[in-house]
Length: 382
Ligand SMILES: Cc1cc2nc3c(=O)[nH]c(=O)nc-3n(C[C@H](O)[C@H](O)[C@H](O)COP(=O)(O)OP(=O)(O)OC[C@H]3O[C@@H](n4cnc5c(N)ncnc54)[C@H](O)[C@@H]3O)c2cc1C
Image 1 (cartoon, rainbow, N blue to C red):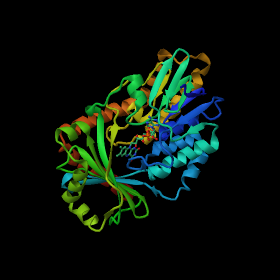
Image 2 (cartoon, rainbow, N blue to C red; image 1 turned 60 degrees about the horizontal axis):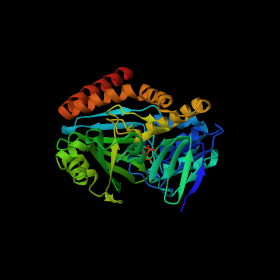
Image 3 (cartoon, rainbow, N blue to C red; image 1 turned 60 degrees about the vertical axis):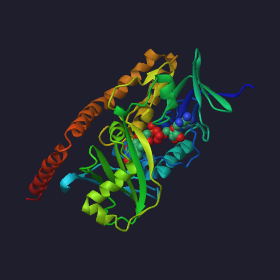
Image 4 (cartoon, rainbow, N blue to C red; image 1 turned 135 degrees about the vertical axis):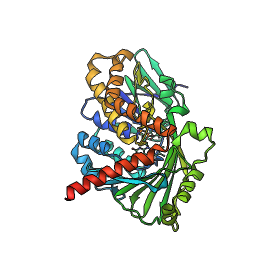
């Protein structure tokens, strides 16, 4: 029995931040676009829910009105400081000038997909898991149980365990370049400032960090993550590690005394940008987590996912007339991605390696930074 076939110019697999940003950036390109996702939206994505400032700027670039819409979401916290606490309680607080929010991914990703629905002619196909992909002479086919989707190019935005990155680019999971993390939603945590994200580095659980992010009224996203290689070498149970950190810091123990976990602990991998990969080939481009574009130190990937989705759209617009999208044409996309993110990733890869080998450097570094911040404040006040 032959499967029902649908044809488009561009296929986008995955409707997370990368896929939706790509679809929004293709608005008015005059192309027929399909945005395919296995999930039914709204859907959760295991995450810290911190939407970094560059992601807000990316939305603004797409259309300033999208940011106005974002500010109307009901569950959110505007973040203007980050507090970093090292072992022995040494800490520093950083103030952020640019607009950044914490928003549950259930709401944020639904809002992004709604923007695609409202402002583009994209054909949105949810609850459509793709099982296979074929590159042919004249295009690319995505194959689900019931249907085949044909396009001239596919944009792989299918996340950390991307089937397209595996099948088209030959990626395999490498624990040296992956982090693992667990997330639990809590209520009833004392002493939290709704405009402040907190990071705790535990003596027992180095190298890794514990986060405590306020996401809405009495709703906190709490998690712990570390390099997958260390998790498997030391056989670390991430949920236990999270509670170990709470026990290690008297301040956290006190603040969690009446806290209640309101979700199950859920774990997920983070493909970090600690190596340079081939992000394209004949008729495909990889974006976001499928391209391992998570910052190795901060663990942020929403911004790079959105920006890479927009850069993929830009590449399609520029090269649409000179098709086919061969591997050599698509190499320009790799160059633009690494031009944008390569320097930061290389710097943060070095920092991650130093912190992994010499964890005691962190308190010292923070002490120096906090003295610098204090000195600057004193100078401003005098
Ligand atoms: C525990 C944890 C905490 C994190 N915290 C933060 C944070 O606070 N801030 C931050 O910036 N980043 C954070 N990240 C990283 C961030 O979640 C990702 O970088 C971001 O979601 C990447 O977006 P994406 O669009 O590439 O992929 P995703 O958001 O994963 O979207 C991929 C989409 O593809 C769909 N899909 C997958 N396979 C198929 C298939 N075969 N067929 C059809 N559809 C498919 C999925 O259903 C999904 O909707 C965190 C990650 C983890 C794991």
